[in-house]
Image 1 (cartoon, rainbow, N blue to C red):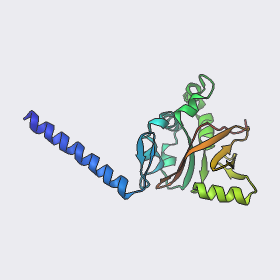
Image 2: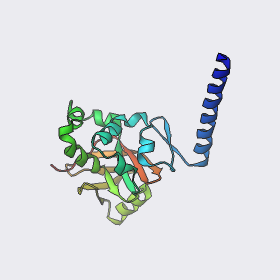
Image 3: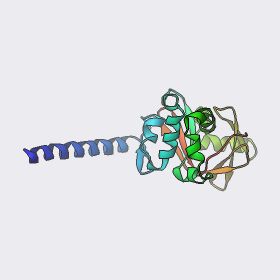
Image 4: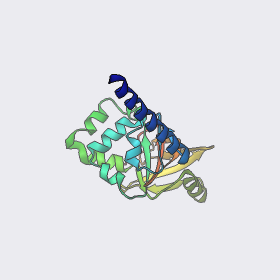
Length: 188
């Protein structure tokens, strides 16, 4: 009986793996944090699978923004990695995750979100049209400045801190994610 259960579990696991492989081939996925990101899934459904975005996912949950980012959108999310959060002064993330700092956390997270779907080519076209820079209004009401250095896309916050887009155009059912290497913050 044990071998029959093992075979059933093994068959189920193999079927699930094959199904995900077929979906990955059918959909143009991008791998982020070791996991394929499916264009048919929303921002949250994909982000929770990225091992490089566990801090961001925890922050989105603490800020109560899960439902918003699962919404229709479309949204453009500049998603800092765990390493980006690690660059912040010691204790910053822990402080922001406290319930009494929820409003501040919401402001910082929504500063990483722009309404609409802005693929890298759209941003590059806006940069070209703007003579080397493009301003993007964030959901929090702040401004990010997009610019390029060679073929690399960067965003700069209102405090002058820049983040490089390390993975662009991770398409979602409700927008697009661009992975960035730093946390950007609104003017305080």
